[in-house]
Amino acid sequence: MFPVDYLDRKPLGGTGESISAIGIGTYDIRDESKAINALKYAVSIGLDLIDTAEMYGSGRSEELISEVIRSVGRSSIFIVTKLYPHRFRSQEESIKALKASLRRLGTSYVDLVLIHWPDTFTPIERQIRSLEALVDNGLSRYMGVSNFTARQLKVALSSTAKHDIVVNQVKYSVVDRDVERDLLPLCIERKVTLMAYTPIERGRVANVRWLNEIALKYGKTPIQIALNFLISRPYVVAIPKTEKKERVEEFKGALGWRLSNQDIKFLEEFSRS
Image 1 (tube, rainbow, N blue to C red):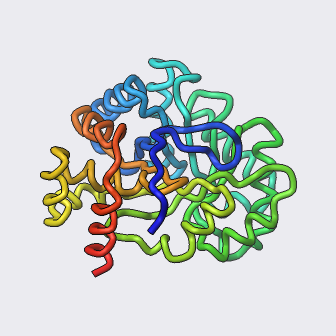
Image 2 (tube, rainbow, N blue to C red):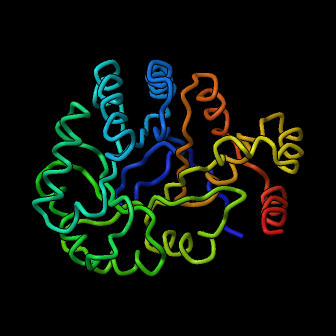
C-alpha cells in the first residue's frame, strides 16, 4: 500500500513547481463549443492543467485550446502536448513539429511536451536528445514521456544531459492498476510525476458496484471515488476527459478530501480480484 498523499496540487517532478492533481484531457472531442466552455470553466475553478496532443483530431484539439487561451490568458493554463514518436528521430524534426503545435495553440511555448509513446525504431537516447532540444530552444518549459514502461523510463532517465524528465503519462485507473507493480514505485523514487489518462475508464467506473458502495459512504459519486483513489497516490495526477461543465464540477469534488486507509485497502483488494 502506498502512503496517502493529501496534496491537491502535486509536485511536477523535482522542479519545485506544482500542478493541479486533476486536469482535463481533450482526446476525441465531439461537441467543440461545449468542450471549449467546459475547459474555460475548469480553469476558472482551478483545474488549470489541460492535456492535448498533435494527433488529437489531427491538431484540431490544439486549435480549440487556442480559443481557451484567448479567453482566460496564457498564464492561467498549464498546457501539455504530445508529439508523434517519429518526430524524435532528429532534433530538427522535433523542433519543426512542436513549432507547428504552437501555431495551432496560438502560443509561443507549452509548459510540458511529451514523447507520445516510445519509437521502437529509434534508440531512446536519441529520442531524449531531440526532446531536450525543445526545452533548449524555449519551445517548452519542461519535458517528459508517455506510455514508457519502467524499463524504458530508466533508460530515458539515464539519457538526459541538461533537462529532467518530469512526467510519464500512462493509463491508470482504480480498475487498471498495472503501473503499480513497478512503474509507479520507480516514479515515486525518481520524482517523476505519473499522469494518469483514462482514469475513469470513459465513465464506466460509474457502473462499478463496489465504487458505488464506497461513494454512498462518503456522499460522493463513484467517479469522484475513482479519481480520489488515484490522487491519493504520491506523484499521481489524473487527467479525465469531458465536454460537460457539470462533469468538470464533479471532478472538482474529488479534491479537498481523501479516502481513509481502510477504504483504499478495500478498493485495492476488490480491483485486484
